[in-house]
Image (tube, rainbow, N blue to C red; front, side, top):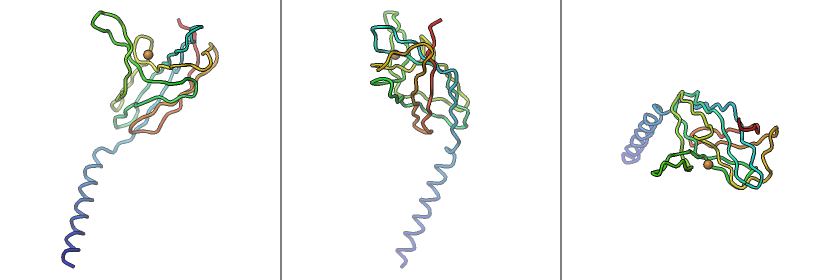
Length: 150
Ligand SMILES: [Cu+2]
């Protein structure tokens, strides 16, 4: 009996400790995406790019970890970076963390959603649906308008 009681106290202590560890991290995540658009695909090519403004209006950080879509074979978050030869290259961004209140603009030459193997060409006036996936927030459905390049 004594053993059982000690064990129980230990468990309660562990639960209390777990609660203390979790509570300071608990905030709320609210991700808002606006001004979503994609470039029309260039005839004869099968890759596309999507852009938007993403803002974390919550009180805790959120991490964008992926993109899902039915409109292409695959989709990824990319960024343009300068390589050693001074050439702009695209690089996959496996995780993009937005602090509370932070806003990031996906735009040509910077962050973008890369679509590989676009099934039907992106035509001006149509729309493209995809879903942004987060490590610590609900997935977000986005509908982007196909806009001509300025
Ligand atoms: Cu890219």
